[in-house]
Structures are given as structure tokens and as C-alpha cells.
Length: 470
Image 1 (cartoon, rainbow, N blue to C red):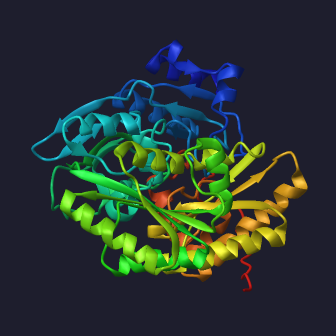
Image 2 (tube, helix red, strand yellow):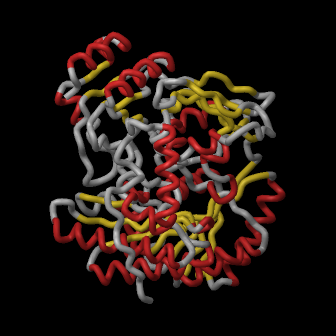
């Protein structure tokens, strides 16, 4: 519970109606989309502008009250779970597009704007913001920036980091810095813009963002390639890239995921094949037609049992919509769904999926795998029940083995979900203790009182690394 003195000071900034501390409100913001993590905040606060956030941060820094910046809470690493109490800071009022600059191809927004709303607004002007996390209908730009979100179009267009040109940030001492700008070149000092992207709210509070736009692609085509084996699908992925074709989307679904997605979407997806590649290309019509023709040939040469090109934009949209529904579809199977992400070099995708299946059997848990085959980012998803403690222990062991295997294959423990709480025990596996200590030093320099989203990224205890045997 907040000290009454602190509570009254915060109310004097935002008004009584914008500080919520009833039990009902605190429960709502005690968890995010990550299963099995919950902690009660002391209050929820809704500032209206950067100036109010500055004043809030100064008070919290003085009294050492934790602050958890929160968008829509769609993250999957418990990144916005208030583990150490304090206040959850919402951007309900800060959700506007401030400027669309068609001359410089930028859009300036507040952090609370919904990702899809931004995408639709710039597309109405013939412009394109490519990052498209599966949660884009409800996730916010501020959350996307804090987690450096990816999406289906990441292979060709990159991730959120590649489109953040400038930021306004309130530091843990209440001061405001502005980074970057409408410039193609700028090497004046440290690159604080890149540092803040993906920092998971541990270094400061993003209050404004300038994002890069590009011309909207002229056209696009979607296709589906079916394979009897994981190896065939993996070979096709490698061959497509080796032929210097970079599709806008190159997605993978294993048989278990296919069955569940088709039962959910009912659009005629095959359920009797080993793997499916969903491929989309965009750009000038002649380039798209040429690339799709080449991709069809490559898939056939990789022993695809069927290759189908969508005959209309509506059919193509149905396919990509079905892929985006994978998590929702899988969540219908059991009370708890744990969606993870591990990334390996794209040439190792088939081997990694095979190892995931092996690990699932070893620990007697149910795991389906889908993901971004083009950039090697896989989403092993476990259907379980958090009330079964013994099974949850086996699930944790299985994911630890999956992370270890990903690193062994030259990969990483997370490609786009972030570290948060869930991955923090494994961070040293990827960075080494020296790397983690360097990050802690940076964190202390920015936030000596550790008020910014404490308990995230840095685990109290590192898991013992176990090398998975083939």
C-alpha cells in the first residue's frame, strides 16, 4: 500500500479519478498475458502528458516507489507484472498520432496508440509501417518499442527497432531527454534511441516516438506449400533465401498446430501433412509474380507435395489471418497456454523443431510449434494446466532444454518476446555472467534507486545450464 503522503502527492498531479487503488482495479493490473505470474500493485495511475509523468517519476524516485509502464499487457514474458508492487503507469490518455510527415516519411505518436490503428492511419495516405506483431489489434506502440516486437513481416522488413527514429523519454530522475530525429544520418553521441528500444521499461518511460515509414507495397501474393517432412520444409526455406529471394512473410506451422488452427479457422487447411510454409511476397507486380513463380519451383524441387497460390486478396488474407490465430486456436485445448520463442539460424529450423518434439516426449508434455521460419524465430507452445504443479515442473524443464538447444545451435533464448521475468534465469546462458554484469552496471547508472520495472531481466538466481544430448 502506498504511504498516504505519497498517495496524496500523486493525486495532486493527476487528480483523484486518475489514481486507482481499489482492490478490483489492482487485481486487473496484477498480471499480463503471461500465464502463472501475478503480483498486486499498490496503485494504478493514468497521467495525461509528459509533464505529469515527470512529476510522478520525481516523487517515486524520492520515495523509492517502483514504476511499471504498461501498454495493453499483451507481452508474454511477464514484463508488466508488478512483482515488487508500486504503481502501474497507464497511457490511456496518451494515445494520439501527433504528426504524419509525408515529406520526411515519418509518423510521430504517443505511446498508448494501438499498433493496428497506426498502421491503418498511415496506409490511408499510401504509406507503410511494416512491424506487425500478432497482437497488433490490441498492443500499443509503447509496448512494441519496450519489447522490440517483431511480427510476420520481420524477415523482409525488420522489427520495431528498425523503424524507431527518435524518442522522448522520461528518465528515472524525472528529467526528459529527446533522442534522434528526422535524419538519415546522425552519429552525435551515444545512440540512446537504440538503447531504449527493447529495454523493457527498465531504463526510462517512453512518452513520444517518431517512426520511419516507407511507401506502401504495390501488390502482394500469398501461397501455401505442403510438405511430408520437417526436413523438406527446412530445405525449401534455405533454398528460397539462397536464391536471393526475401519474402515479406515466410511462416512455418507443424502438424499439431495445423490441426488446431484449422479446427479454429475452418478455411480448408490440410491437417495430414508434416509441415506447411505460408509465404507472402509484396512489391511491384512484375517482381511479385517473378518471385512467386521461383518460390513455387523451389518448393516443388524441395519435394513439396502441394503448392497453392491464393487466387484472390481475400483468400490470401484468410491464410495470414489463420496463421495469426495460432495462439488463440491452441489456447482452446487446455486451461493454460505457454507460448515461448527461441531463435536459431534459419538453416537449423528443421533440426530445432525435431529437437523440440523430442524434448516434449522426454518430459511428457504437449508442445506444438509454429513461427517465422524465414528468420529462424520459432514459437514452441505448450498446452498445460497451471493447477497441476507436477506437470508445470515438467513444462519448465522442457523449455529449459529447448533454450539450451537453441543456444547450442547458434541461436538465442528469445527473438521477440523479451526477457522479462520468464527468461531472466536463462539470460546468462546467452550473454555470459560478464554480459549480464555489464547490463547491470548500465541499469544502475540510469536508475540507481531501481524504481523502473524492478525484478525484470535480471534474475535473482541463474538456472544451471544443461547441454541437451542429441
